[in-house]
Length: 231
Image (cartoon, rainbow, N blue to C red):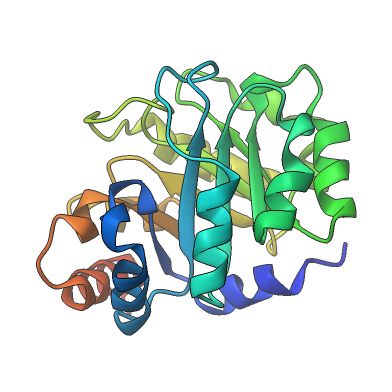
C-alpha cells in the first residue's frame, strides 16, 4: 500500500513527540506554534471532541484551519466524535494530514477509512483501554496508523494505563512494519520509555510539554527517553 507522503515524514522522525495542542495557550496560538517549531517537534496533534462520543468539547475545523495557516508541520487530527464519516472531508479541507477515528464510534470502520484515504489523507484507527484488540480485525489493512489510548478518550487527569503496552505489542504483530504505532494519554518522562519499548513510535504529549517553561528542553528530554539505547 502506498502511504501518504506526510506519514513518511513522521516515520523518518521516529521516535516522534507530538504536542497535543489541547493544552496550549489558544489566546497566543501563533506564538505557541512558533515555540513548538523552534523546539524541533516533527508534527502537531489536535484532539477533536464532540461532547457526545466523549463528554468534553474541544474545537473543530476552524482551529485546524488556523493551525494549518501557521505551520507546514504535519497535522495529526484525532477525531473523538460520533459519525466521523460526516466530517472527514471538512477536516481534510481544513488542513489535516492524518485523520484518526475511533473503532468504538462506528459500526464498521472500513468505509470511513476508505473515505479518508480517498482524500489523500493518512488514515488512523484508535481504540480505548477497555476495547479488545479483536475489534481492529478486518480494518487494519486500510490503516496507516494505529493509536492505542493509554487513558480513556475524552477524560482529563487520568493516569497512564499499562494495558496499552500489551496492546501495542499485539498490534505490532498484526500490522506491516510501515504502519505507525501511536500512544496517547499520560505520556511523560516516567512512561515514555516503556511505551517506546512496547513498540510506540509517535507519542502524544500534553502537560509534559505545555506544563514546562522550556518546550525545547522538554521535547529533547522526551525524545531522548523514547530513543532505544544501545545494549
